[in-house]
Each structure stands twice: as structure tokens, then as C-alpha cells.
Image 1: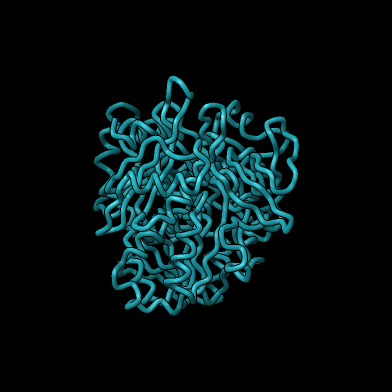
Image 2: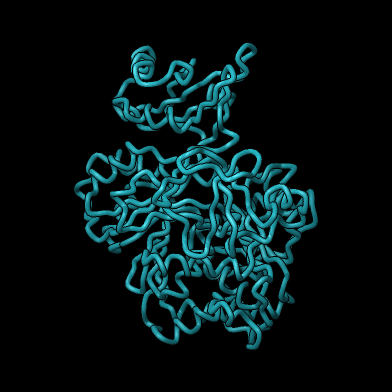
Length: 508
């Protein structure tokens, strides 16, 4: 197989094949009651790749993957990568016009879809040309599982480092889905960084809690192929299921978003679960409240709680806290990971002094090729080789970065700037608060005023007047919310991020 990515030392399906030859009987993947050894995984991948070739899929063709967390995601990913097809991983929670827009934009040759989602897809096919489909969990000639039988050799292409390998849709709206194009060069970065920072090794039992239909899915598949560890896939974000899985499978490492850690802390008998195998828990996302970090660390003192930061557009890691610095640097998003450049700049693209706030921008081999067929959107995001994240942060003298919020989230009230994360962090210290979000409310006089939505802990009661008294004693007056609403839960995107929209949060 000449001219593939030997210069990078990485190519997912080929590395998997070598790992399977080295440790054929080791368990590679656990998902619900299904377990696959590396040899079984590799055999299925080889068979699926042969069927893809037999059905006319060639290098550069785009194959969609619309699946819930299951073994079908890594199988589909490795098989498409093996023949040089571009894997287009779609969010399994997309519906209606949003899913239709993404399917039209992606221009797929084939769609691998779960039976439970195919009804939605069939409805969409009434409004657009139908895409040939393999149906996971289905029966008959379109069954995904029927293609686990050998179909002859796969078509093996020549690879170039900057060829498209993966497209992931981010922030897709009905009219403007944006497909992030990642190359083989981009995809080598995550396994390389995780290896250099010694987060995982071959003995790791890695838990995958987040939806694999986001960037975490393919990059963890790449790491699994290279490290040869065992991946435990969780099919739902449920704190008890997660705790049971950690206890049963002796999970060492997992990463998730803040709400999952909040839910874990809310489990009344948390201490009764055996989590002694856990070494590292990574809180991913944006501004993570210090009280949450401290509370989880106090509840699980044997676990190193670290933060990382990145985007789908950056493959995804930009910064990460060294596990050995977990306690000392709690609250930081870490230092720039190996091979990555980061700067903090002002609105004129000038680097700001240490400790001052500005936009986080980054440059390096982790930065996406661009947005699929959207040159204008790419040019807005990548300028002079630097990707502009839209996030506000600062760097201290020791090279550690701190995330202050989204640039677009900044509230300007009466001409004064307020970063929601600062107010949220203080609200988290108030007794009885499980979760909160601070947001802008349009105002005729001041342009914007501040709102806060609060979710109380089970059994707790939040009295707005008392909360505001607490905030006024600890914040400048212009940072104190004008309106507080108490909710049972906060609205979220499919990736678990809270929706910071006044109309949605206020129920207007």
C-alpha cells in the first residue's frame, strides 16, 4: 500500500490491522452486552470495506453515518477510512428540516443509519433524492450486519496527508449547515497529543460517554487503533449507568461535559459505587465553574480532574491540563498541547499583555482544512493561517490559559462589559444551586440587561430575593442580574451545551 500516511505514522484502519495482529484476543470494544476482540473488530472492518468497494464506493466518496452510540460507529468509521472514503458522521439527534439540510449539503453516496432513525430519513427522502442505505439493526438486503460476511478484497487507495478523511457538521441550522473538513494530517493530532501527555496507554479502560456522532467518536477510534486499549461505549448520558459501567469494567479515564459531573454529584449513594479504578476525569467544554470542579474532586479525591479545551474545527485539542498539575491548576483549561500555537488577541488582532482578556486564536496542524463547500465561511474563520475561535480567554505567566466565555456571549449593559462566566461562577457558590446560566435580555434603555436561569438541587428551594442580596454583596452592581428564573432544567444542544437564549430560557 504505497504513498499512504507513513510520513505521519498514522492511518486508522491500517494501524488497527497491525494492532489486531499483535493482540488478537484482547477486548477492543464493549457496548452494552456486546464485546469485540481486536481480531473480530478487524475482520468485520475488512468485510465491510470489501462490501463498500463491491457496491462502488471509491476514494473521496462521502459515506454518511447516522447512528447512536454503539459498535456500529467504529465499524463504519474504520471501514470507510480503509478504502479512503470520507466518513461523514452525522448527529443522531438531528431531525426534520435540519437533518434534510445536512443530508443535501453532504452529497452522500451511501448512508449507514440505525433502524430506529430510518423512519425520519424516509420522510426526508420524500423531499429529496433517496440515498442508498445500509440499516443497522435491520434485516434483508439493506442490513448493515449482513455485510459482516466477507465480500472479497477492498479497494485500497493511495493516501495523502491533506486528503479529506472526515466531515463533521457543527452548529447546523436549517439554512446553513457547516461541515468541518478534517484531513489525515488533522486526525493524527489527537492520538499524538494524548500519547505525549500520557493520558492513556495500552492498559487503559477508556469510557466514551459523549455522543460518538461528535468529534470525540472518530478521534477516540483513532486512539483505540493506535494504543490498543479497551473502549467502553455508553449509549446514554445517565449517571447511574456510568457509575455501574465504571464499577463493572474498571474504567480508568473518561471525558464529559459539566452537566454529567453535576448529575454524578446528584446521585445520593455515589460513595457506594466502586470508582477506585478511575484515574482521570476530563471536564470538556468552555467555562467550567470552580465550585463544580472542587465538589467533584472532594467527592472523588482519588480521581485527577482536569480540563481541556478545543473545537471540532481543531481536531479537537487546543489546550489541556497536565494530569500531574490537576489540583494546582484547577480552573485552567491548560497549556497549549504539543505542536499547537495559541495567542490571545484584541479586536485589532494585536496580542494582548499577559493576564488580559482577548480572543483565543490558534495555528498548527490541528486546524481544519475548512468548511465543506463554504469558502466564505472558511475565510471568516481562518485568517492568515490562524483560526479564530470566538472564545475569550487569558494567559498567565506560567503559560496556563483560562476560558472567560464566548465573545458573542459577552453582555454589554449600559456600555459596561460583563462576562457571563464570572457571574455564573459566583452563583454556583450559593447554597442549593445545581446549575445556572447567565444571559443577555434586550433592553430599550441599556441595550442589554442580565438574566439568570437557576436549576436548584433536588429538595432545595431558591428564593430570588435572597439570591440577589447575596450577589449584590459580592459583585459590582452592573453585573447583578435584573431577572432570575428558576427552572427544572436548562435547554441544551445535542452536544450537551446549554442554550444561552433569553426567549428560550424565559419561556417567551
